[in-house]
Image (cartoon, rainbow over all chains, first blue to last red; front, side, top):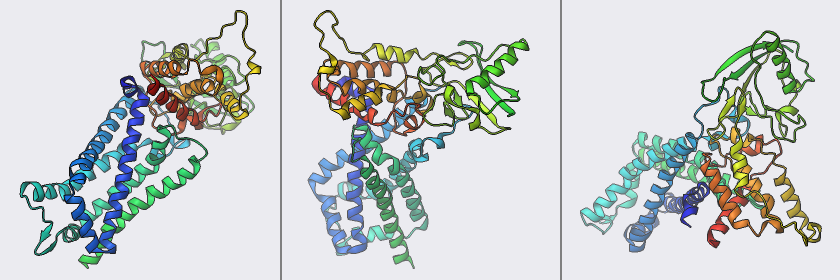
Length: 225
Length: 248
């Protein structure tokens, strides 16, 4: 089994498995965030549950962090290996004739997403850790009411932040447009369902990032103007 | 047709190469691409210059010898053909055509447009075969029932001619379409089951050892493959490797 994980295909399958995990996480994150538009009270309650539940905080969260770090590190390791497999480049290369821009530039969309993840951690995750585990305030309350919705709205007052979020989610959509189906191919799932899955993958890759963009724009326009 | 050729010239494996421009006139649209290069070489020889070295053998699209990266695509702009089956009618009068060797560190240039593709041979030697005892009571292959679909898919995989277009066109120089095809042609047949575990493990290990890059599923190899080898073969190889790893 150790030989499997050392092989090029083993690494590729590990990338795909971490991608599946991150895509499920993304959908769950979206399902919670959209509540901030539909019903702020429910959003507060679910946020409080996710922020204080020991299973989520001390089991799922570390797995998520591992998944994110693994996907990025392995992505860069594989990109480096692939890049060094051809020392002399072609004088003329017509990549558009046989593949999509998205599929050839996963590393760049990945870099953009990594930059966004850093911004997102500074914005939300680090202050949350500070409040809960350094200050020790696990109540989730501020001035007698849940703080989560107000904190979210507060963040999206800044047009620069909203702009950065929109750009980042466009890159996420580009990444997923190739990545979703690529992950299935990597684990060996190429069969009679593949064409249908491609359609579903395109829908997921477009609608989920678009939903996040709508949430950011909604709070910007709804609370600023 | 009058054309301007931009051709990679490299004296040998140890020297640096460069693109050299060659104008060429009066090329018939009915010529094959290799015939056009023959005309160029005749001209170079008569001028006392060194002819452009390029691989070729059958010139019928079945041996996999001819290679060439033409105007940014393996085997040129046409689909499902090798360079010997590419005709000059695919180009326009006055065109500039870039002609380069298949590029990958695992395919080092020997001279001009000829590259060493023996890495593929070593991958084949590591497991791309079945061990058949032919001394005496060998069972007739036709007596083993095989579902039509499996036989067809195995045959499709076996049409891979090992030309290396998949490696040349892949942005990662990955050989997974080639190895996927060679693993698949046996994985689909009963005769291939006995050595299935060792085959996929050894072939993938040899592929990695040769220095090919990793597949990122761009699908470029499938588009440029002159034999239309499908990405399904890479997926099957991945499944075979998972199965083999669980078994061993």
